Amino acid sequence: MTQLSTRPFLQTLGLLGAGLLLAACGKKEEPAPAPAPAPVASAPAPAPAKVYVVGTDAAYAPFESQNEKGEIVGFSMDLLNAVAAKGGFEIKFVNTPWEGIFNSLGQGDRDLLISSITITDERKQTMDFSAPYFDAYQLIAVKATSKVTKFDDLKKLKVGVQTGTTGDETVTKLQGKNSTNVKRFESTPLALKELEAGGVDAVVADNGVVVNYVTNNPAAKFKTVSDKAFAPEQYGIAVKKGNAELLDKVNKGLAAVKADGAYDQIYAKTFGAAPAPAAAASK
Ligand code: ARG
Image (cartoon, rainbow, N blue to C red):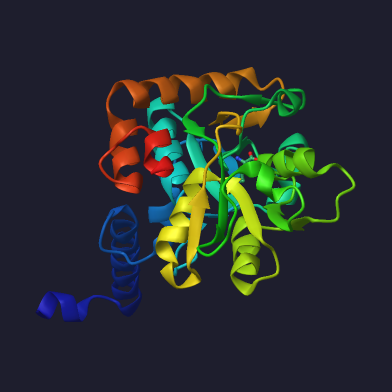
């Protein structure tokens, strides 16, 4: 006590200063208790992995759609997430209107597309596709009271399609290029709403989406009409033409997911206890 109180004032200050310094150093070195967020966020971050941007037209339930929270969800997301995990790459989904979707890939705004895209010879000229991951075909939706029983019956009727889809191509072929009875919509749900409103007599789109809509909108009183004339289609994941490195990762992941049962699980989650895709929609 006496000793301390007799120390010169300046020395006391010096001690205090050293103490403060020590305290400050100690604080810096302590990892957890400081609430400072900066060190936590930036300290051990390894070189950030490339996150591939995936374009999808999320108006195509149950394959790709937006939930109430605005999150992009569906079979395609579950599948590609599993594929990416197996293939060792990271992805982020970005809602991308169908009409610009192929351009976005060509321009490099998107690295990948998963959007129930049918692999066609024409598209193969401007992009590369993964191995097929889903079988599909066109299906007709009409009002329950409609007399339509086959594709040919649509020849002179107003038919709604999503612009630039295989449904559009199929109906355009039937009716002829200059037909004014092909009514093109930005999205497939919009075409189906128009059918409900009576603005078109039928809609032609991918079976899975038509079945999903008809099932979930009983008030619309639709029925489906299938026709053997529709060619079998297969969906593929697209990369920019020549992006062999990414395509390889996707194909490896896809093969792994098909082999280890993950694909079947995702299929069953979306479509119920897994019948063959074709059987699921043709009932
Ligand atoms: N399978 C059809 C096609 O490739 C329709 C795909 C539409 N996909 C979508 N997400 N809107 O043309």
